[in-house]
Length: 162
Image 1 (tube, rainbow, N blue to C red):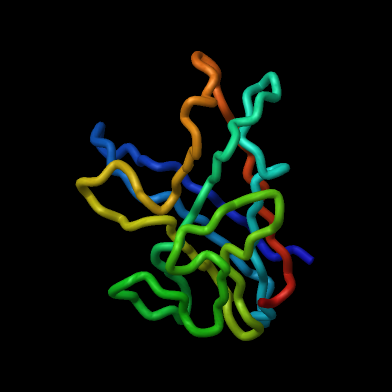
Image 2 (cartoon, rainbow, N blue to C red; image 1 turned 45 degrees about the vertical axis):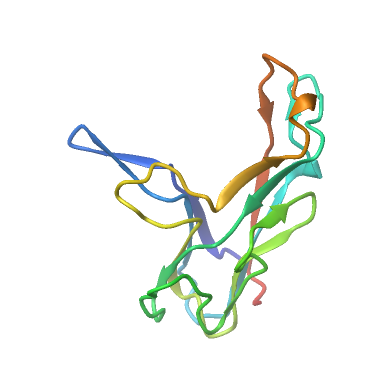
């Protein structure tokens, strides 16, 4: 079943030669009708951050935390909160993305119709960074000098309600 699409947006937007920074976010567009629900999960492929040669960054953890929700029938929030009829494993604390699926956000049956946007941080005009996406490194002595480390996040959108 086609749930719609997931868009992950960049950190900055160019407007009239002036950079405007926004928090990273995910957007789910459910245009199926019927509001039958959906679930967006993410995982770090094999749970590792590595060099292209395969050298693992020991003790590295990629962590995320939700910010605000926007969408049809979701009231404007004064503080980040999970709206009624939605669920998430990524709530008040930073949650580690590892090799297992983590429920980023899911809509119960009767919710999630149209576009739902969830941010990973606050939208502040002055800020260029968010503290709601973090890479924690347990032992910086294990970092190989001059090497680039990468990890791949796999996003999955299912038509299974929360």
